[in-house]
Image (cartoon, rainbow over the protein chains, first blue to last red):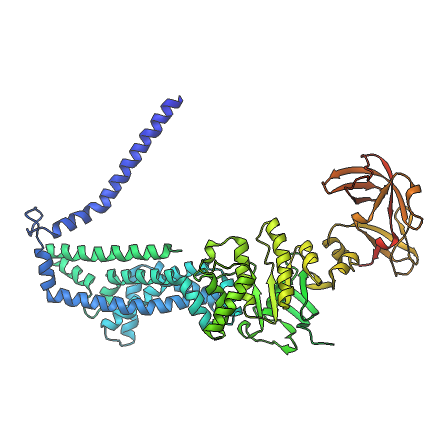
Length: 263
Length: 355
């Protein structure tokens, strides 16, 4: 094969791969695009009529939906705060204290919620709550969300801690800082991007979760409410809700990534 | 006798099955520049970390100015450390880093500002107060680390290979500067290094360590001129180790039967190793030019290397090959490879070692 032939072939391959990539993007994002576009459609059906905020108005007028949103926000806020504190503490224990009884077991178990299927986790939690005689309520949703969020927070924080020179904390101790001061003045500011990134991830996961919440819920959260609506048929109102949730998720995930990348 | 700045008594440190420091005793005098010197893994850094309180001895006791340190945490000890990696706080400015220790001790703001200014002057970093460590060169970071420790006026300053990350020229400049700063502040410096030249240049006394043990503790000159073991002789500078046996007091018989006068207190029949530094050997064409009381050994030049400031010869004596170094001075005779020569050295220059 001549050199010219081979460059032509490379160029053709390049073009094919670029085209392929665009097709994949189209496959991923076209449904989302359709959903967003139709959330602004006046008509109830999938035929374009006119630009309208009708479905957004209807969404905000829907008391049940607003109640579900309120539950979601409460669950997300509380579970994020608690899991961020506990997840950070777990990361510190695993990364900074080299030898303690049961460390390896704890290390392995901590990541279980990330690995096992949501359905399994959901069924386990449901069995757990009912065996304790615990009434399913907003509390059980919060507890469940904390349970899986701790893992995600600690993974993110640990990655940050692993890159932190341990002699920085020794230097703080050498310079008369007690343990708490060393943590507050040196460790925490330096792992803060990781902690905030973990918190935003936890917030996103909590706001998005359907499967686990469906099993342990008392009141509906926004995702389970939407899921319930779909069973009765798709209305453009769902498009509006979905667009809103999508926007919130994208913003949260992007902020989380930006924070984790921060030096 | 005055109380030592640091007193180490029967200190052993084990990490699992590994003995990092093996039952050492050591007194570091107040105000001296003391170096812990040894190859990596010899236990020198572990010893330093035990003085700092970053590790605790498995056995034994450490005192600072007579006060038992026991399990006292690092923040309660009157010592400060300059870390090998500098360990500067990246989220604080130079001034913030230097002020950290004083703020933790709740020193008033006025005094903190004054002392931070003085410390930054001392290490010649004025004008850099508001920079972050990430914006400084290696040498500048090193000075910040030094100022951050010295500003607290510790009773003992601990330095863990602080110049290891700098290039040669900067390292040599910093050696002199560190020594000057130590004289100026008068604080006891305990300096860990694996660089023997650095230790010789800067220290009042040196402790040579290997395998967790102290081999020799002595002033720099004595360490070089009178090492007490083969290990110390070889670790410090370049040397020739020639095996032989004491034939009568002060005389050692080499493997080929030739006799040399040497510094030895061993009884006749003792197997010894002669420690003979390359620069202590003079090369001559004939015996006639050699003073009477010098040792004379005949051999041939097997290799010559030109070092600029000196010439390096490998001299073959048949039973052994010895390195000799001659300064490159005007009028000095040069010898060609293959030339027969007579090597001469003073009896005091050959030291018989038994360990």
